[in-house]
Image (cartoon, rainbow over all chains, first blue to last red; front, side):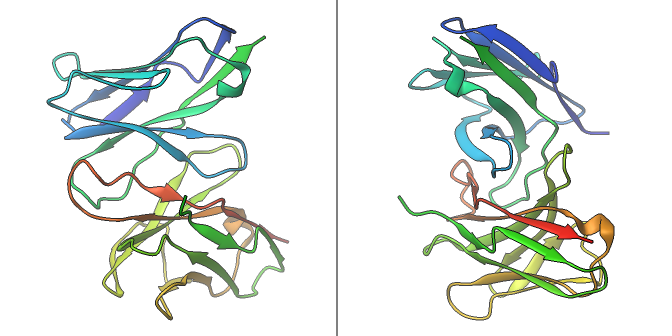
Length: 112
Length: 116
């Protein structure tokens, strides 16, 4: 069955370091991956989208890679800050308007 | 910046009562969604809506649920007879287009539904 996994449920990191979150998928090939951030009690917020033919996408301190051979996406936050503490969700997408299928994500805590 | 709004932010109801959750999607968006998140669990898809009809629904979206776009701006989710297990955060989302690579979903702040 189709499956998407994020490397860990929780990740603690020191302020100023680079946080790296991993998303692995098996048994299917999404056309692209979306990354969202969710704060407790709030709705998910879109961060970045990367297509299968793109190797890397950047936005400010965020960087996403997409390796279709490894079936893996990496999400990096450089110079992490306590305000980056949240749950980050990797979401595969196929066509334009299909509903999103969320996993539990990775809860990132940036410690000052 | 345009945003999705939802009302109320918190709704408390008795089991068996009907509730209507309201959403105002971003004005030029064409596709609308409802998701829910039970406390401590992942966000789950309920239903999608396009061109005044349901385009897809999940197993969760049974006969107790209905959606409506009564006018040009509101998008509502009705639960006919609430159960304890309907207690959750309900999120509305919308997208502008189905064009591939441009369909990031914009989520509202959610309505916390508590069924007693």
